[in-house]
Length: 243
Ligand code: URA
Image (cartoon, rainbow, N blue to C red; front, side):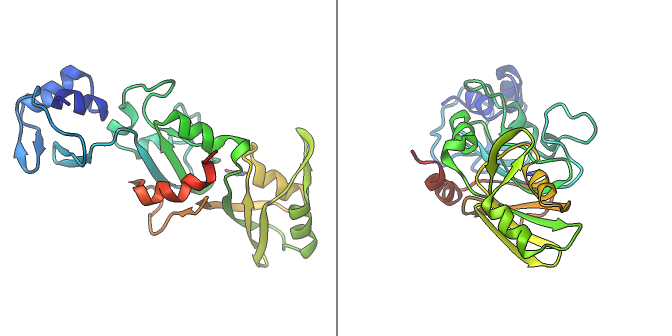
């Protein structure tokens, strides 16, 4: 692919901007400056260095973000900074594929929830991960206001009715890890689901952290940091969404 088109596909701006970056000597490949925007490069394993930043070529971008508290998952936040400001501009500017421009969060977390958030420009992946059909397990660590009783755990596992649906929702797994600390696994993603489920059993969420989606965890990624998903990370998620 031509270098100008490669940079465009990765979100470095319009084709004109990308050509300008190359012509002005801002782009290196394998340590060598390249100034011909029309030069062809093989995409497999390609890394471009743009203004000092190393960027692996990715046909589709999949990233993992450790969402910090006090951020909104919306592109147009109302009160708190958007999580998208934590990502580099090329990830937000990647050209539109199907309905998706730039990477989009796979589901949302509340402003005060921390933890694992996936973002991608692969619309099909978003659809599969979000579809109730696939029951992708998501693990939440919950700090509660009141002590957790064995009855609360049993009720969360057998099902509680939330106000917008007469069908009970239940946790796929639920374990009290401390007097005020609970690990809860859900396979659906209803609005404020953890908070509403805890309210339904007479408790209240004081702190909420998503530690896992499918078999994928955050590892040592610090709050506010992001990283690319590697092949092995995607392999951990694939079983959850294969037909
Ligand atoms: N459930 C909630 O109540 N909030 C979240 O952010 C995620 C799940």
